[in-house]
Every structure is written in C-alpha cells, then in structure tokens.
Image 1 (cartoon, rainbow, N blue to C red):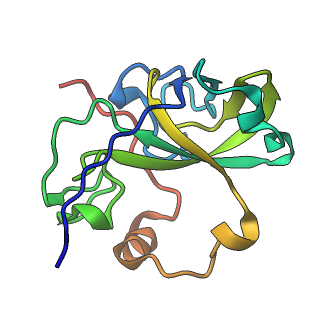
Image 2 (cartoon, rainbow, N blue to C red; image 1 turned 30 degrees about the vertical axis):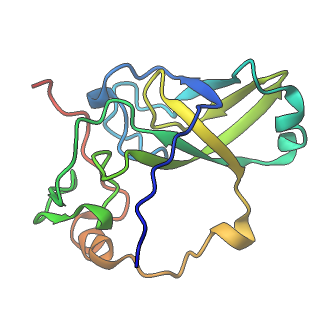
Image 3 (tube, rainbow, N blue to C red; image 1 turned 180 degrees about the horizontal axis):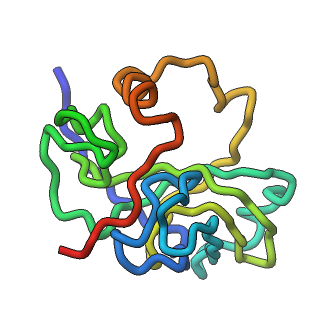
Amino acid sequence: MMHEQHFTYRPIGLLRSPYSRRIDAPHQSTVVAGTQTGDVATATLELQDWLDEKAIQDLGGFQRLWLIFAFHLSEGWKSNVKPPRGGPKRGVLATRSPHRPNSIGLSAVELVRVEGKTLHLRGVDLLDGTPILDIKPYVPYADAFPESKAGWIDEMDAKVGRYFAPGPRKPR
C-alpha cells in the first residue's frame, strides 16, 4: 500500500539568466537556433547565505552540472500535452514539458568557473529567478547513454531532423 508523502524543499540559490519570459528561452539548453540572439546563454548561480563555499568545493574540475530546479512559473498541468516540435499530444511524463504533476526540472549546463559562492554557467534554458533545488556533477560514464532509444522523439527526429526545435513563440 502506497503512503502519500509531501516534501518541502528550500532553494540553494536563484539562477540569474538573460531570459525573463518563457517565450524567450530555448526548449533545451543545447538548442539555441531560433532564440532571440542565437547564442548559448550565460548565467550565474549564487548560493544562498545558509550554505557556505565548502558545499561547492571541488566542483571546479567538472565541465557540466545537472541543475535540479523548480518550474516556479508553472500554472498547473494536464495528463496529455502537445510537444513544441509537433505531432500528436503525448503523455506529460513522456515529455519535457514544464507543466508537470510536480513542477521539478532537470537541466545539464556547462560550468565556466566557480568564483566564491557563485557558479558561472553557460548553455542554460532557465528563466531569470529560477529556484535551484540541488546541483549534481555531470559524470559522463554514468550519465551519458548515447545509444539509448528515445521512443517517439526518435520518430520525430527522423521526420524533422535531430536538432530541430521551434524558435520563440509569439506572445499570447
């Protein structure tokens, strides 16, 4: 029998990025074609006062990090969503939609440098002010499975190209 639990998290920091609106940010951190500048975005993450520099000690040697974050502007969710690349509606848990049962996200970003309690990052797809819940180092042998199948996304890649992503949407 499953027991329903609730969890409360305290952000470890807030991300500062050039994206203030959802329509400005790329759909994935590595897909910048069609964004306003077409450049890979830079950002900073400063640890909250209650964390000290020891918490990020030894991160400097890592090229990439996983950011676990809250989709703080999400306004609810639906079981089926229409992916931005097209095609039929899909089960929300088979997509990377920001509108999820638990508004938690995961993004792989490039670590440029560590300066005190500030991480300088590149290749972010997160909005300015995004609460970061945790950081984990990206470890290629454990985190990369390039030969893995990606279900309906593989089918979409075959139709429209592997790195196709729509540009920014027009404001509603």
